[in-house]
Length: 168
Image (tube, rainbow, N blue to C red; front, top):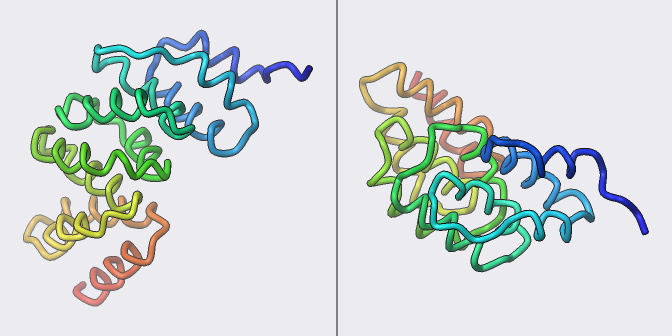
């Protein structure tokens, strides 16, 4: 029997749920250690623990999707852009409705992160947030929107970047 790699042991000891979520998400998508990740997460109602559910959500655990989704919908998520990018790249489209609700509840600083996650998951309605940011009068906010868009591997993000380039 193959043993778990050292990174799995590290994840079991880390106290940072966002580090766990980001590394665990990558492992869930790119390795065969899914069972190790599944056994490391247990349902919790504490939104501080919600990021821990991301790897299990990627692996299709409906309880994990609901746990993470509830925290996202409440807007009770730290401004961790790498974590939101991991959600956007996770393929867990079941999180889209939670992200849509949470975008209205979250702090203003998280609006683009929520929209980027939605766009990354294929929710084209999130493009309107980026269109407004790019065409608005706040240059700093437009640049922040562009920073998010360059990290999203989708045709819609590319199209928005072309519009931003044309309008500059």
